[in-house]
Image 1 (tube, helix red, strand yellow):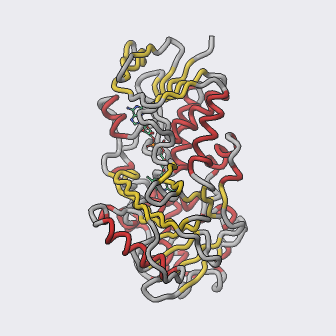
Image 2 (image 1 turned 90 degrees about the vertical axis):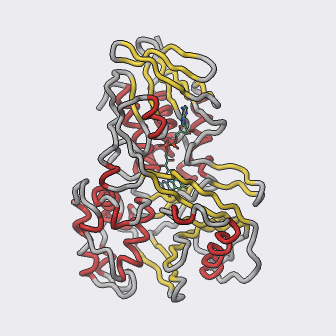
Image 3 (image 1 turned 180 degrees about the vertical axis):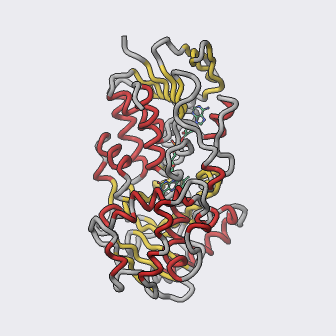
Length: 415
Ligand SMILES: Cc1cc2nc3c(=O)[nH]c(=O)nc-3n(C[C@H](O)[C@H](O)[C@H](O)COP(=O)(O)OP(=O)(O)OC[C@H]3O[C@@H](n4cnc5c(N)ncnc54)[C@H](O)[C@@H]3O)c2cc1C
């Protein structure tokens, strides 16, 4: 008889588990509390700008092997686009200085030996001082592992680690930062080419997965919030939703791919991160000038990254808790000031949508990292997934997909 996998939560961790298990001939039921799929990685039509927007700009890197494998498995690899070479243009809006970091397309980080390709006003010794990150332990702070001051820090290390960890880098986990560096930066330009979902997050990560699951006979149920799990004899035996209960059969399994606070309510006694950081995005409806690069790093302003899409310029500010209560009109002007400086724009402020995600990710500090649980639980047929579980990575798409794959492997009896 076909076994059923109940996946709770249709974020990308849940979807990656669902796709793997559907491929392994499980009968898959996805239960999602809201009316939309994708969780924190979603797209929607916004009436204020008359645009389809993503809740946030999501940057991937070519070294994100699970993200690329997932995209291949749902046929969307072509929807992850970026320059063929790992080049990162930067603008310091406080001085007007512009430069481009060129990491090349090789398999070794040889660019650090080439003065022209390095960050201006930095030397080889600055880069060698970053090496302790590569082998830093999980209990170590970034601020204790590497120098968090100076030109290289301000122009490269701070923006990259802030984006990766979503905390002020000195308080971040050196172990998590090191994992990112090992899988991308340290392997050379080939592994750090920037990739952005095009035309949308939903098109690259969500809708084709849902379509594939449905065509494989999966049941995708929206507006179905799990309220409680019933246990007996060391296993999950029932799921209590708002409207009805469902039995979990003797051969069936459950993957909880919900946020940490929900998992803790459903499974009291579960350790989980409990401190979060915000991310702020703003989407300006404007056709970018022809010279606009797809992605620009911004130093010395409020904005950190500007992404150019065919119909909008979108900006990201990480660890943005300090901006959550700022008046929207003030915020719009503040952000537009940086965008117009970077792209030499002089017209009025275009229509804008600001998206504040208050609990965008858990704070990637050593203390929070230590609270992340494994995918396996004390119940034999119940597993955890989500970017907040112990993936060894910060809260990223790569980590979320990895967690879903791990949970799916455990369901199938693997490691
Ligand atoms: C603004 C923003 C920008 C980001 N930028 C990047 C980036 O540049 N690069 C990157 O790699 N990552 C980025 N991330 C992180 C990335 O989005 C997340 O790591 C990923 O989406 C997490 O997926 P998940 O499945 O683990 O969790 P979630 O997306 O949170 O999914 C959990 C799902 O469970 C559902 N749920 C909750 N409770 C219940 C219940 N009781 N019953 C049923 N369903 C329930 C929720 O509605 C949700 O759909 C960003 C995140 C945000 C918010």
